[in-house]
Length: 447
Image (cartoon, rainbow, N blue to C red; front, top):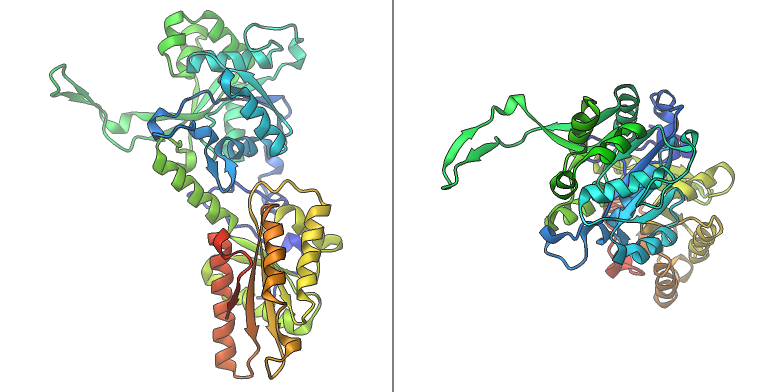
């Protein structure tokens, strides 16, 4: 296989168990279904995020827990912001967390989002979000003209970050046609009823039932009227929006089976699982920069073949100028191959490029500097820069959420030894990218 030489040639792999929480322009361009997902009516989102997270056993509500230096709720917001046809996102949070939410919106440069105060229960919070979309302040309906309100409102949990555009599209279209739509999943366990004494009463036939999940979609009129007509008991004890639409509007929701990735972060262990999925997705691709050097290009080609079994894809470019600059906006991993002692200045150039594009670094960016020594001896000219200089550069970059690592490689004329060295570089680089360990920042590893 020939190495790719442009950003569009770098495929992004996604799978049902590891959804693309970090989508790229390239992924959209190559997806033939993307054009079919255009929506010609306004769609907005309500994210209830007022929970206290008691089941996690943590003092911090789970929606604000940090994963790779970024709050969980920010990942969920990005899942909707990346969808071009979603106009706005309303996040409903407890009044005491409004300042925290506003800080997240500003710090991570969320563009389509506004925060409104929630209520004392889940349904009261969702209602506040719906009213806010109608032009109110979250407590009563405002005067916004009907034409300016969303046609469809998607309601989703703030702690379900892995939601894909295809499902959102199906929910939005079905909601517009039917008035309401919701995601479902097969039941994993059999549901049983117990007696007051704690004995088995009866069980349900699992094949006839489904678990109701999020997202759910409604026309604005249906969800607004449902909340306008529902009782205080519904507000206090109800949990199912689809039930309100059926009971108070006579709207029978279209049910759409969703993927396994719809799981909800509920317990402390789920935070670790979510972080693992994010790390895995971040680690599937990298941009290799050769500097136009022939030895570097040869090594890059060998690395391209070596990372295949490691479930990675590499895009290979001579520099990050012109059309190749697209990598600066969409890639989270860079492997710089240098063959001269000036390689440290090349690392500085990448850092300068990242700063110039003013990109919001929502995740830790990784730069793996591979120094290739092509001389017969490990002469002074073939060595990397002084360890202190590398450490200083890496420490400064770390403050900007960029992790810099180094690998030293000596080119061998022995084919077998060279092949083993290349494989070692591929394995080490992959491990650094997957691990994103801050403890190894600025370290020089030998391959």
